[in-house]
Structure formats: structure tokens, C-alpha cells
Amino acid sequence: MSVTHLPNTHYTGLVLDQKKQLLGEGFDWLANLRKQAAEQFSASGFPTFREEEWRYTNITPIEKNQFTLPDVAGQVDSAFVDSVLLDDCHHIVFVDGFYQAELSSLKDIPNGVIVSALSDGLVDNEALIKSLLDSVVETPALGFINFNTALFSDGALICIEENTVVDKPIQVAFISSKQGALTLSNTRNLILAQASSKAQIIETYHAVDDSCYLTNVVSEVVVEPNANLSHHRLQSESTSAYHIGGVYSRLEKNAIFNQNSYTFGASISRTEAHATLGEASDCTMDGLYVGQDRQHMDQHTRLNHAQPHAVSNEFYKGILGDHSTGVFQGRIIVAQDAQKTDAAMNNRNLLLSDRAEVDTKPQLEIYADDVKCAHGVTVGQLDDAAVFYLQSRGVDNQTAKNMLTFAFANEMIERVSFEPLRMALLANLLKRFPQAGMKKEWL
Image (cartoon, rainbow, N blue to C red; front, top):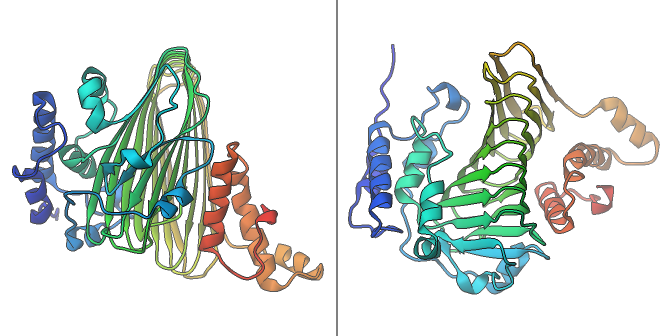
């Protein structure tokens, strides 16, 4: 017998509340888009674990907590901001979903590059925002995207103009302040790499304290012909918080897109990475998720090979300890006309506890006959023989296990060429596994 899901009245009330002054309220096209999303959300609500795409992740705690939108950003100590901003980057900073000009560093943005908050971009670049917003995501039956469209407070607009090479990475930093308890941060990022451009973008998510709050963020990415874009996403939220986020991209002919996801924080998190590949485009998706205590981490990917001669490589690793749970759902779709597709998917998981759990579900949907597609999955624990070998060389049992665990993670860390980001990832690993004897030098 099917069960009808009734939308949560608290959240439908939020999206239908006409008293809330939202970003871009004076723009008719945006008001209509928000209204349509609000109506779709009020009809369907959030997804439930009864839906196949969400069967491993129960978001009931999010509905029960009844998060609300803050009116303004909270205060954040400048020392904390400095600790999460990466060296040698351009920075744009948001606190509780609101742009903070005084914490950002955009004065030295080179010519041919637009980096601004949507709140400013609607004045200076309305046509660009209108062309990008809701152009990549698939909104039907995706409750959190409709929820985001209806209520986003701000976000980043990044445009790399044609034939432009950006001198250093652009960091988009999202911070939850001390007022974060039961607040909702709803943000939207729009990223465009125009033809033959090259850039690197880093999204980071941090919290001042261990508050319970909800982050819901959507990033839409368009990579035009012959452009080369790298996108890194570091999620290091409060372990009492909830994080729902996604990167939705469209690659045009001969485009190159590298999307890398690193998940460390949040009590319940869901990270989506969806890409539609044009002719002869190249997409790489790497991911690392590290859980402990009772964290739940859901990684959901979809690669849609829509045109011929495209190449995709996907490699995700998970480390799960204590009572934590991990999910990897990877899906590769090869359209009928996408001949000469070359696609590979690999997911490897390391369980550090008998109580840890991972659900992994790789999928291939192939409608063309001249393709090369493969996928592989492994789930296991530390090799007793390897532990014994290290102990025979004078290493104690716990340190031997730590060394093997970090060696497992190191394969993903080594792929990061930008040193400040690589060091930030190492710091997060050490923070999640602070056993005695652990050293950065191992990585």
C-alpha cells in the first residue's frame, strides 16, 4: 500500500510567507520563479526515505527541528574568519547566508572575472543571473531544490569571461555564526566558465561552534566549449548541524570539469554532484567522506552522457568509524546518441568499527552500443596482516591502524595540487581522528 507524504506545515509556511522580504523581490521574473518553486514545494514537501533516491537517508530530524530564517547575519570573530580563509585566494564570504563585504577580498579580482554576491549582481548583472538561475538543476520532485529556490537569501555569482585564465583560486566561504542554533542558511551559487577560460573555485562550509542549524545550498555550473574549470567543495560543518548541498553542472563541447567533494562535518549530510556531458567533454568527480560517532553521510552522483565521445572518471572513498553510516549512490547514464562514451566509476570504503555501516549502489544505464563503461565497489576493514607487519617493525597497534587509515585517505589528498587546500584537508582529517601518535608527515 502506498503512503502519501504530507508536506511539513512549518516549512510550507516559510515558503508561502509573503511577509518575508526576499532577495530580488522587486524583480518580477525572480518573484515568479520563487512563487512557482514555493507552490511545487508546498505540494510535495521534502523527499522521504520511501523514495528510491532517498531510501538510505531519513531527513525526519530536519523536519522536526523546524529551522527558521534569520533576519540578519550573526557576529563572527575575525580570528575565526582568518582561520578558515585559505591563503593565496580571492575570497567572498557569507555568514548565516548573508554576504559580508568587509570580510571578503575582491578588490584585486583581475579583468575578465566577475565575482560578486547575488544581492549586488542583481543590480549590475541581472541578465547574467537570469540566464543562469534554475538553468541547470532539475527541479521536479526535488524538494530541497524547490525549497532553496523559494527562499535563498544570497549566494555567489562567478563568471570567467572568454579566454580568461584566473591567476589564483576563488574561495566562496560560508560560515555559521554563534546565533546558528535552529537557523536556516539557504544559499544559491551561479558559476559560468565561458569559452576557453580556466579557473579554480573552492567552496567551504564552517561553523563557529557546535550549534544545530541547517545549511541548504545549490550551486549551478556551466562550462562552455573548451573551458577548463576545477571545483572543490569542503564541508566541515558543526557535527550537530544538517547539511544538504549539491553541485549541478552542464558541460558543453570539449569542456573540462573537475569536481571534488570532501565531507567531514554535519550530523546528517547529503551531497549531490550531477553533470550533463556535451560532445567530447571530460568530467572527473573525486570524493572523500570521513564519518565518526553517529554521523550520516550520503554521497549522490549522476553523470549524464548526453553526447558522443565524452569521458568521465569518478572515484569516491569513505572512512567510517564508531556508529557512523555512509551512503554512495552513483549513476552513469549513457544516452542513445552518446556513442564512444568512456566512463568509469569506483567507490572504496573502509570500516573502522564493527558498528559502522555503508550502503553503496553503483548504477549503469546504457542506451548506446559502442561504449566503454565500468564500475567497482569495495567495502572492508583494515588488513590484519598489514597491521601485524607494522607491529613487527616496532609500531604499536593503535598507531599502526592510524597509519593504514591515513594511507587509505592519502590517495585522495594527494590529488589536490593547491597546497593551502591540501593542508586544510589534512587538518580536518587529524581533527576527526585525534588519536595519540598521529602525524601530518604520514600523508
